[in-house]
Length: 433
Length: 66
Image 1 (cartoon, helix red, strand yellow):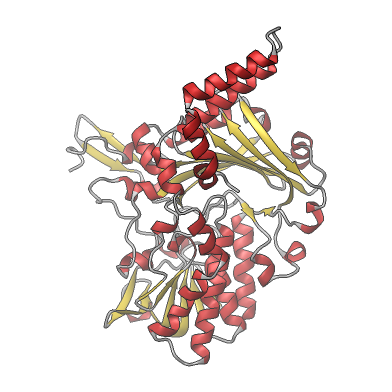
Image 2 (image 1 turned 90 degrees about the horizontal axis):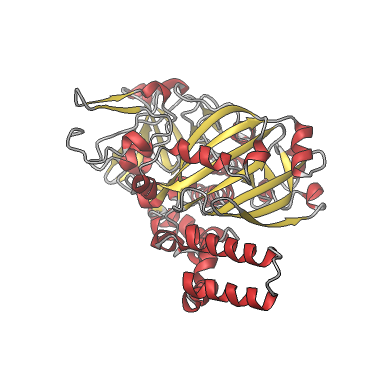
């Protein structure tokens, strides 16, 4: 590759990078995407679920053209305690046609498909190409290096950092270094093979329909984290995430936590007889709003996880949205033939007005609350279990007395004041919806 | 430096056990062939001494299932 020049070079062909590339290519901007994986998606990991928005903005007929595993009709919130669980479930058959509640996908298929769409629109996507450094001139990033020598240099009027939570572009540019362990979770996951009809029988689904199980409460040994089980075509995505700073406190191996999750009586029957096909791990941004770096700096626009935009349980859609907005801001700059900082700032403006940052602002305390203590990951799950048990066991004790006992448990475990405060504000920061 | 490290978090944070500490010889061995390129080690090292350099040509881990 000789020293090439494009209007925009995007590092990373994940959802954020490809969404930006597609948006730019459609506007006739010359754009290249550098992806370190063999194919887009080969080095990406998510749960995961892709939602209707903003994919529907790129593809109004996404329900027909996107590589969908299963259309989610059943969403379950499961509060885990040591040996029991409390489940809330919403199921609507109509979601099967519209895919309005989202769909499960596989990163290898989804990312490859999206990158291909960008290529069809005119973007140049180069795989097997990790970026090793940035090229700076007068405090601005003017290009990227993929190795030594001029033939491994590529120049651009603007660079998009879409290279994930450990972004090389942002760290080499001095915009954001390695995140601290309090701001990331380690997610580990297994793809477990199970025949499609068995998945449908076990999860009570019709053909092509999917279930999405989000586990909260005491999932990772009382620490801050969660778990998931998602149904794909003929595999289950089963995984857990734990805040890295808390894994360091636990001093336990991450796969021991995954094994404990898989062995939980509310999880084990779902995966029984399944064949583990792949083991994956990745870091997940968990810092929220305070951890988002400067979105525009030194000629670099940060999108997706590179900008720490993942906000449980939404990551892919945040990445897509930021990619689209970066694309729009850069297309506008190209039209004006002006890639100055002022013009690039338009991306940040679009983001400030967008769903992405609105959601982040609303949940700006979640990281702090998660780290404050085990009440969401130990006390409340225990309390809920104890109360449920008390009320459900018919032993001749009157309900009046049982209700009194329940109130006493609340007083002793967390206290009314703490409970009231949590119900008023804190709990909405840690719940997925 | 690894000999002085109190907890050696790399040895228990790695999802594939790539970091192994030999107490007798005071040596840390890194089995990079199994690396999933997740970055946990980079984040947890208290001395910030671990760097992750992605392999060229798309080598290294390639997830095939999702």
